Length: 345
Image (tube, rainbow, N blue to C red; front, top):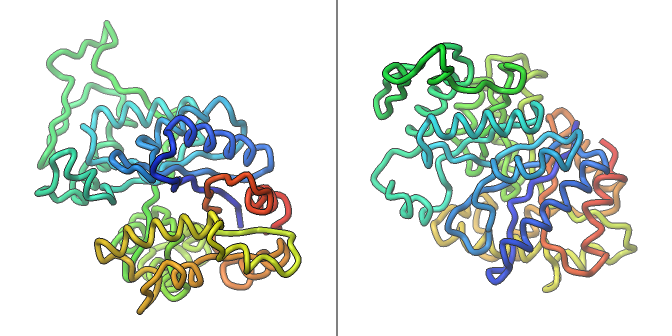
């Protein structure tokens, strides 16, 4: 099992995007030095709490600041782009990272983002899958393009010129064809899980999922995947809010306290999901962020966390640490480093 981190990130509304992105960059640079295998970035365009507006830009920004860690988007909302534009951006990012890009795709989780682009009346999920199919062609085609689908036309036939090199799309790094496609999994019996299983794509189980729903996602992926069970497990990633600490008998008191950044993140996300009646992922009859935190936060000494993860999730591809805002309290702020160095998977 590999270890990674996911910078959604969730900060106070008055945090500046400059400070937030710098904090994320520093966390990922350190994670690379500490030996973590992968890093993911969220993406919302109209959210004061979640300020990263382009996960592909974050991947590109970190491409030359890191050496080994794979860099992923969670998610690039394909329906927000023209297919030709997003194909060129994906190719650029993959070449900058020298093939370390993992492409998480989605269609926009925030309805305010959907409203902002004027797509409230669109089937955004279908558009995303339609564009994904076009991308597969654009990123591997050596010829001039002439693609027509239900909603999109991508053509370079009219003005393309072989002698001048016009009308040709760049490929992935060294023409690779093994780009990882991922989708997030949230509520029970997720359509994304079944879709990814059938397509041999990966899933990232949300850190907001109760144990019961985590089990549901794993079972459904295995059930619908044409892969062997061992290979199917390798396509499942689990993100978790984790408080790794070396404190004696203070971990539980701190993690659920008013000053806990882990509870602050949980509180903000719980309120958002409850507003739009999507909070069932935390478990049945969960009515407060405190109850939600009790369901989803994993805390303890490195050995405890190691044992808890191995006892339930050892066959999965990776466990992904959810980053939280820095607090200037080393008990909280050392958690990522302790997870990276002392949790042995």
